[in-house]
Amino acid sequence: MGSVISARDLSLTFQTNDGPVHALKDVSLEIGKGEFVSFIGPSGCGKTTFLRCIAALEEPTGGSLTVNGMSADEARRARAYGYVFQAAGLYPWRTVGRNIALPLEIMGFSKAEQQERIGRVLDLVELSGFEKKFPWQLSGGMQQRASIARALAFDADILLMDEPFGALDEIVRDHLNEQVLALWRRTQKTIAFVTHSIDEAVFLSTKIVVMSPRPGRITDVIESPFPPERGLDVRETPEFIEIARRVREGLRAGTVDA
Ligand SMILES: Nc1ncnc2c1ncn2[C@@H]1O[C@H](COP(=O)(O)OP(=O)(O)OP(=O)(O)O)[C@@H](O)[C@H]1O
Image 1 (cartoon, rainbow, N blue to C red):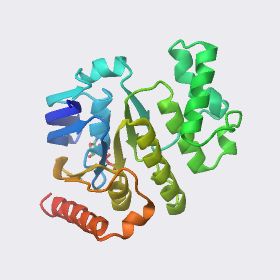
Image 2: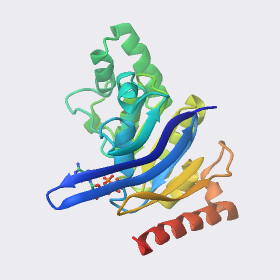
Image 3: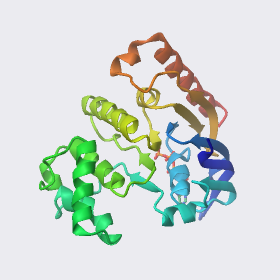
């Protein structure tokens, strides 16, 4: 099976008033269809920049990148991905349903088609019945689920998630991690997920990409041995603890020689 996302020697240097900032340097990575890949690394190591390159929101200064076999720009125009940000970013004056409908309206879907899709994606994130609520009537975790529903609404195969649960408390986050995993199993999407949490990365992923800062590069890629069907109790197993240890070591190695 070919790669959905393929990066070869990808580099991005920002030119700033204080000189060049090497946000990414020689990043090579293959992400296969249906994989759940987490990116973990200290602040400023280029995780967001890598996601933004995939989304064609930044232009790499070196190397090559394909998304679904196309250039990132072509993939963006083909709406190959949905993007979920750290802040839910819902419009407060629109109901949850109308927030999800917004990209569909712009894409010219009929009212009936919009309605069908809103119902389907709200069901996927377990928010059926909340369509008519306004964002401020929902908890932080529910708002984030609504924003995931919005990203799912136009049926892209790829979901890019940039620290979607970073601002939530641990109990809510645990619950959302279980939900995202269930969503991934049901939809078989390819997911690229940025996080600062070792536990989150190890729990969710089929592959964990450890990055180091200045210049942002990959220090380790760890394949996860866990079956798709797993519960939070997997975190107590020796395998989990061993992988978490390896991630921690990769993070430490990255900071020592940075
Ligand atoms: N538009 C820009 N212009 C100049 N520098 C930038 C720009 N965008 C990002 N950078 C720099 O590139 C580096 C990588 O940033 P990036 O946001 O990708 O890191 P990150 O790993 O996602 O960090 P965090 O975990 O804090 O979100 C940082 O040093 C950042 O300051």
